[in-house]
Image 1: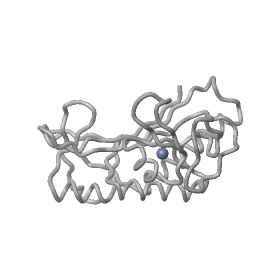
Image 2 (image 1 turned 120 degrees about the vertical axis):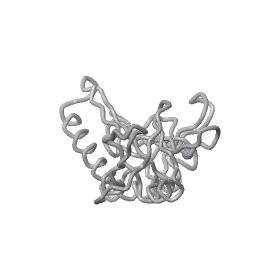
Image 3 (image 1 turned 30 degrees about the vertical axis):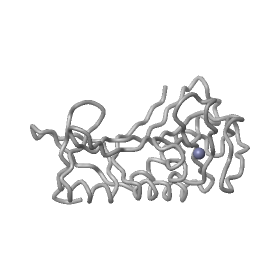
Length: 194
Ligand SMILES: [Zn+2]
């Protein structure tokens, strides 16, 4: 299995920025919303932007790879999105939203950008396409966000995470603790050089 996943903290304006960078790389990128409950219960859509997909479902949005891949018949394109006519979906990029949790111990819980696929599912052409499209999407992530310099209460650093510019400013301004899945909390620190 090929898997890439990056924990991140984004405010809604950072999500918009990430979507713009991905659309700049892939003008045909369109995002499927995610609805709570069993799949048959709610209509799923293909939206033109990350933010419309997130507003529709609320928690996460998905981008099919290769870009332009055909979708299951139960996904309805909306807002002028042309139905994709490419090969079947072979991998799915997930943007899981980060969230400010305000009950009991207030913190900003990370979301993630993740993709995975099974090499055995993929023909040789797609096998070449998926890594290059994945790289382009993570290049867009790097352009839209910055390294999150975060440390544990004992001062040890955690690497490999990203934070959007708006989230970065808010976390520093409001001194919000950062969280990832689990009970550990982190502090965002100001690097000597950004
Ligand atoms: Zn929708």
